[in-house]
Image 1 (spheres, rainbow, N blue to C red):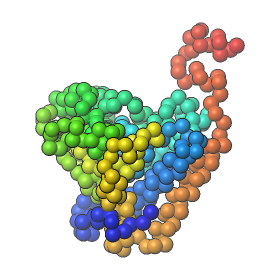
Image 2 (image 1 turned 90 degrees about the horizontal axis):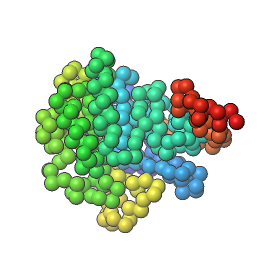
Image 3 (image 1 turned 30 degrees about the horizontal axis):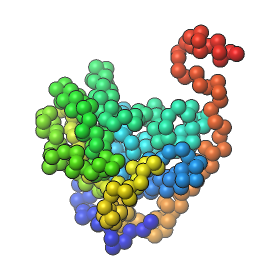
Image 4 (image 1 turned 135 degrees about the vertical axis):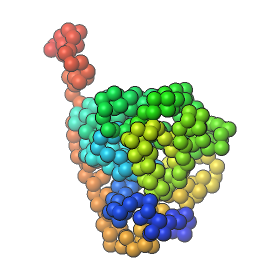
Length: 352
């Protein structure tokens, strides 16, 4: 991958970026680029493996990297991430080991879920990352419940929940935002609008001018942000988290992004997307936009760029090799990690 004339440049001056990110801007932006590059390498590798039949399912996050990495860097260890479908990179940024995530993708005996979850649906208790549900929008209520629990325990954490544009048509969206607003709960609602609810375009979802404007109905702030601009995504998430942590209640952020791959490995977008969609999405590639900004402003040399890409590919290659070599879950594990005290109908057949 390389930035070119077809990529929409990030418009910020170095001074503006420092105001958006803060005094540690240089370290944060390079860290973001490393993580975004890793996410892109992971998607490329796993999509290829799925087509070879070596992975059963894969939902790429290509085009979502700026939001995912910003969430990981802007949140604290006390916060909780409740994902939609494409936030796995957030768990990695927060400290979940890539080799462990790879074990999950291959459903091995070393997978924390022991192969019980669909690939790309990891759970990572170590970094407060809740396993996603494939049911649209249900995670919104889960995040509101977590936020209520944090409030009841006087815990300083904030719940960050992510969902797509299609989830704003689900009942859980309306119930979740209303409940969180009434009780001023510490939750950030992140609507990652990639403009397609599988095959349904966003204009078929709503007559509202923006999805962010829906926050007004519940009395909470709604902000629309360019989700392909890491700097803006980071700034808005940091603001919303600080607002929730200080007791001011929830915020709805609509991140406008471009889905750059099929919805999942089971989808064929050529059947419903316009012929120029790929070119429009490529012009807003979040990885290349950040890469180009770093190069133009003296933060990314050719040598460092090559080193970062090489390291990302190495990490992915080694994690995949380790996972493919791991054994599958044992038959006995089918009933493990289900009951605290196994009842007789589980215990007796297992003994046999």
